[in-house]
Image 1 (tube, rainbow, N blue to C red):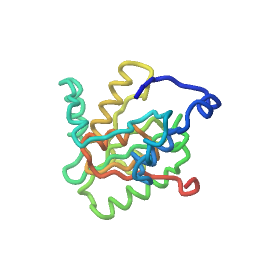
Image 2 (image 1 turned 60 degrees about the vertical axis):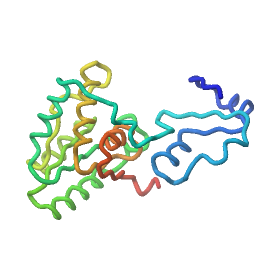
Image 3 (image 1 turned 135 degrees about the vertical axis):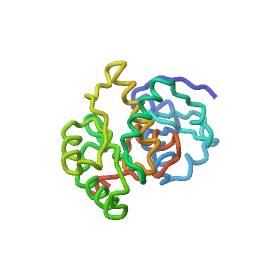
Image 4 (image 1 turned 90 degrees about the vertical axis):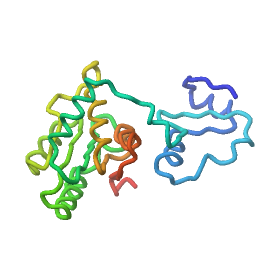
Length: 206
């Protein structure tokens, strides 16, 4: 088997390989579980896989990740701001994610209301989002139920990347995560601890 990390033009892919596994195929096998596996790959001589996410998994694969003390301190602080009782993570992904940016905010509002109706005051939410307007809207609507990092989201700086990793670890410590469709960020947070995970999809795009 030869593994090469390189992008090849679509026309070349079709002529050079007798089997192509695209990112949408990996998603159906690994994430959504729509398919059990990639099929019988032994029947193909040349296989080309395109993927931005994991294509293999193991129950212990995430346990080796250890975070340093300064990041752990930030994670602990944000978690301490949540009430005792049930803790729910909300991850609304917008901006450049074509699969999730058109999900109505009302989908998340509905889930939050359902959780509050069930657990009353014995519940709190951690909100992670790259959309400032969404954070302001949900914070104003649910007030003391919502906790979030009060920093601008910037993935193009070292601190921005650190802040994102902090929020990923906070989400991993929630009892459940409600996430935008096909976001590797919230899915990875879920995989750290295998907490409850529900992906919200725009029913008009299903």
